[in-house]
Image 1 (cartoon, rainbow, N blue to C red):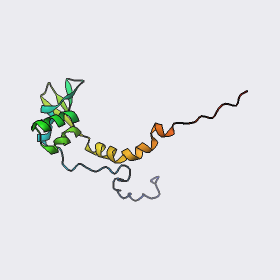
Image 2 (image 1 turned 180 degrees about the vertical axis):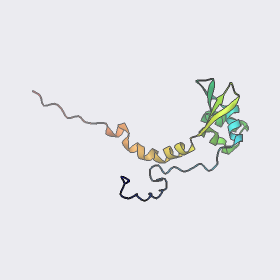
Image 3 (image 1 turned 90 degrees about the vertical axis):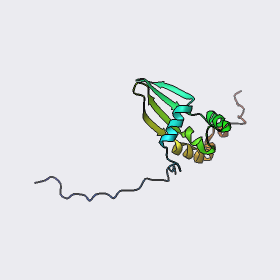
Image 4 (image 1 turned 30 degrees about the horizontal axis):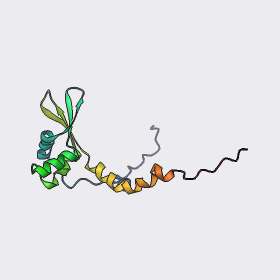
Length: 131
């Protein structure tokens, strides 16, 4: 005889709560051309374990490339991508897209400013009455 008197019904699947961060997917998904441009123009490079490199394009580099005419005006999107490159294999291991994080941070910046340390600074300290 089974130990369970009755089986509970399956809970309905709930959608992701958007009220937490209200982060939406980027308008343009990352494609192979964007990944190639990050690899070609990366100025932020960090060595990782296993002969891998973390490649990124900084905002300053994107500004310089756009003023030179080497990138289009809407290629600031490259600054959101991080490419992990394996030197031994000569291939891309992982691509991370931080557009959702950047957009959420921009939306929450005004809210976060309410809790700046400067707003808690004590201006006039009461004088001690010790005699």
